[in-house]
Image 1: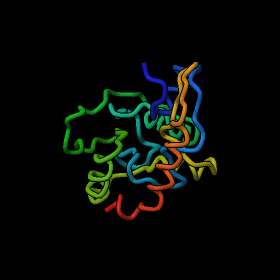
Image 2: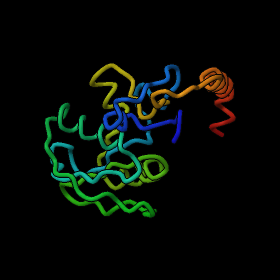
Image 3: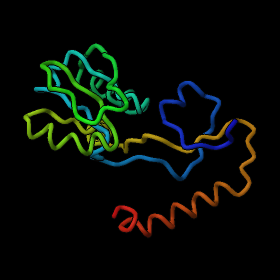
Image 4: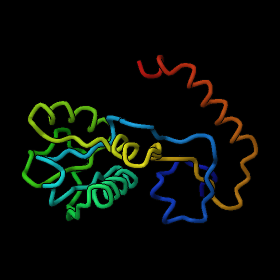
Length: 168
């Protein structure tokens, strides 16, 4: 059992009993470059989208953006293997949700090969005007957090002052 954890936003739908600790999250207002859908041609031609095996939230966000914003109804395929180190071969009508290191490494090559890159952070913010939130601190019912919220907030403030060093 865990009292407090950084949890994917999509997990909240399966656990409505969890509370959200305000103040910190993983999210962005606009482009993130690390949460993408890589496809061939225009998104309107995508007939099958393969989810990312690493991320419930990114897959849910891709579904919402494609179905509600773009008015598409793609079929959902199988995810890419977790160990895969190179992008899939582009296939007409297909797209892949990719996050993290794979998104950062694969998108330049994908674009250079003429592929379409949909940044989900950017798509969400352009559509809604709101930041995209991927993960947040979730608290189980009855948890006694004591000093943890204050410690996490202090750590966030400290790290915000050293973003350049962290990024390097």
